[in-house]
Image (tube, rainbow, N blue to C red; front, side, top):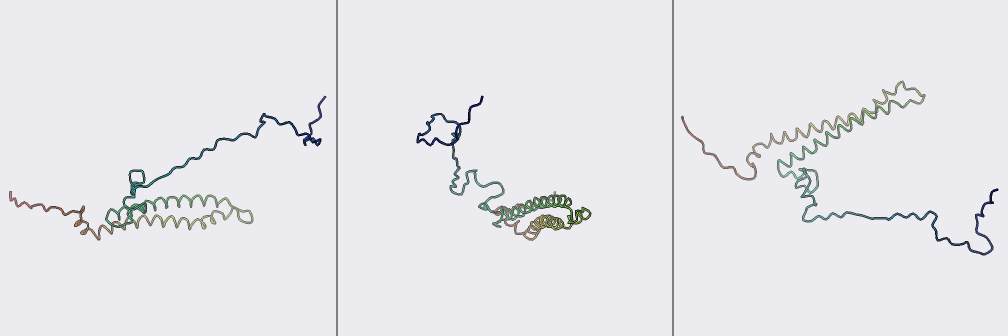
Amino acid sequence: MTTPPYPRTAPSAGIAPPVSTHKTGGGFRPAANVAFNKTTIINGSNGHGGQPAGVQGTGGKIPGSDFMSNEDIRAFCEYHRKQSRNGATELAMDADHLVTVLRTIPDTTGSLSGSRARARRVSRWLKKAAAAEKAKQKYFAALYGTFEREYESNLRRVGKGRTQAQRPTKFGWR
């Protein structure tokens, strides 16, 4: 024989239900720990022994953007050339992925007959953007090459910041 279920509401006789000292769930409260890191910059140092490689003397900007030496110009061109290479690769891969996804979408009639052509027409612009990034690589390489060619005599004269000692010429006939 089964016992009848207990009433779900408190009895209305004015008697309070007994208070239990035993917890029956709902008491899980994990400890909350808060942690934070504080970076203090003292005299331009960032705590890592100076600036990261490739960002020398620029205060965290694009490397070489000060244009104060031929090394700055070289670093600037090299940085942008590498960024363009990465961008061209990513855009070309994204264009291929876009074509793959768009070819599976049927037209309004449910036909896949022209889906490849439509996907190529849409992704053409992304492929052109990838080609433009590839062209940027070539232009930044040409920029530094032209700089060296045009200012070669000035760079030789400046050297490493000091005048080079003239070597005496030998007039040995034997």
